[in-house]
Length: 392
Image (cartoon, rainbow, N blue to C red; front, side):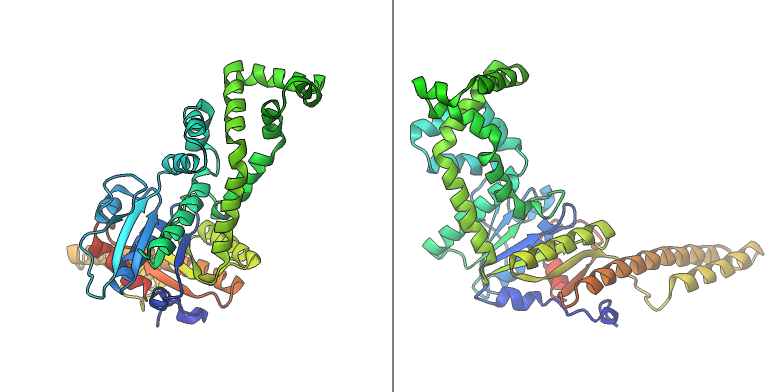
C-alpha cells in the first residue's frame, strides 16, 4: 500500500503538470529549509528532458547543487545547463537571483543615466537594495516579470520555474509587493520626500514648525548625513515609485493566470506543514492556481510491515536471551538493527500523522511524497532521482 492510500488524498501528477503546454510558469513556494530549491531544479530538469524549453530561477542554492546545474557564477544571466538529455528537444537554462543586481537593473532601466548614477551611488540605496526586509522577495517577482517578458519577446522559453526566496514565512513572497508599496506610501517616506517637492515659500507651507521639529529629531537619531542620504534617495526615486507599483501589479496578475501553477513544498513536520496550510489558504483567497503539495524528506522504512512496537518487543526478547549467554555478537547486532528500525518506523508514523492532519484540513489537495535522500543532491543524476520521486 502506498503511504498516501490510507488518507484518500489525490496523487499530485507532476508529469501531467509539466507536459501541459498551457502552463508557462511554475512557482515553488514554502517556508525556508524545506527543499524548495532542489524541488524546483529537479522539476525543471524533468520538464526539459520531457521536451520543454525551460529556464529555472533559483534562489541561493547550495553550492554543490549550483555546480550540478553549471551555476558556478552568481549572476542574473540565464545560462544553458550542460549534460541534460535533449532527445525530446528540450532545453534548460538556469540562473541565480542576484538581488542587488536586479534592483540596480530596475534603476538603470527606468531612470536617466544621470539619475541612475545618483541613485546607485547613494549610501541609503545601497543599504536598502541589499538588506531591506522583503527586497529579495520583491526582486524575485521583478525577475519573474523580466523573464516572462523575454520569453514572450524571443520565444526562448516556454516554461519558467521559480524557486522562491528562503523566507521565514512562505507568505513573504506574496506580501512583498504590498509591503514595498506600504513603505513607499508611508508617512516616513512622505515626510522625507516633502523637501524635494517643495521650495521657497511652498517649502515653508509644507514644512511647518512641527515638521521641522520632526526632521530635526530624525537628524539627531539617524545623523545629519544619513538623513540627507535618505532624503536624496527618496527624491531621486520619486519618479520611479509608480513604476515599482505598476510592475508589481502586473506580476501579481501573472500569478493569478491559469497558465501559472503553484507547487507548495513542505517538510513532514508540524511547523512546515502549518506554514504550507497558511499558504494554501492564501492562494485560495487570492484565487491563485494551486497545482499541489510536495512533502519532502519522508522517512522510508524498508520493512514497512514490521511496526515499531513489534520491533522493540523483539529486540527486548533477543536482548534478554543475549544476557543469558545465547546468540552472542549476532544477537547483539540484530538487537541494534531492530531498535534502529523501531526508531525509523516511529519517525515515519509521526510524519504520516502530520501529513494526514494536513490532508484532513485540506481535502482534495493533490499530494506527492518524496523520500529522504540518502546523500546530498550534487549532480544531474541526483536531480533526476528526485524528479522520478516527484512523478510518484
